[in-house]
Length: 158
Image (cartoon, rainbow, N blue to C red; front, side, top):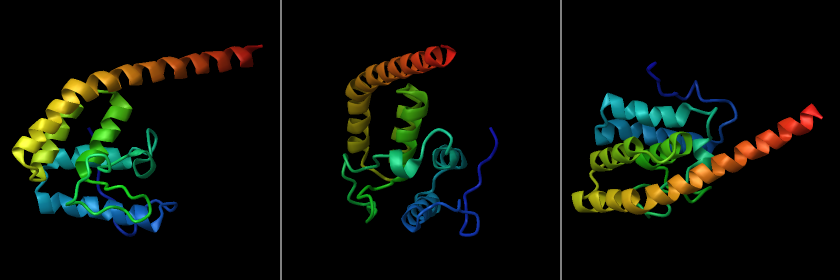
């Protein structure tokens, strides 16, 4: 895998809003503060830089459901773009509900010094409830989107 380098103030994509840049900079600063390993940083940077698959600023629901009081929320979106939630939302959007994305989320939470019991409880909840529910909805969504594509293709052929 090619190493992804973080943007700096001179290399941000042109269309990014000031708030999106601020949220990105908070995540990058968290790398050193929380001591993310090089591998963990790459997971997060992949989520932030893969604009072909999704827009992390619009598509991530962040920590608003879990209510992370220790991560500042965006004033524009009212979402806390904590690194582990950005990665987790990205991984589930791109790859679907997988053990790997769930394990990485657990590992990133522990790196950010989330209490062990709380991190383990959240992992258990996502594994037992979230993965099956998301797996079903993700596959149904894929099924319907592929059906729509087939219908559009048939209409073009006519």
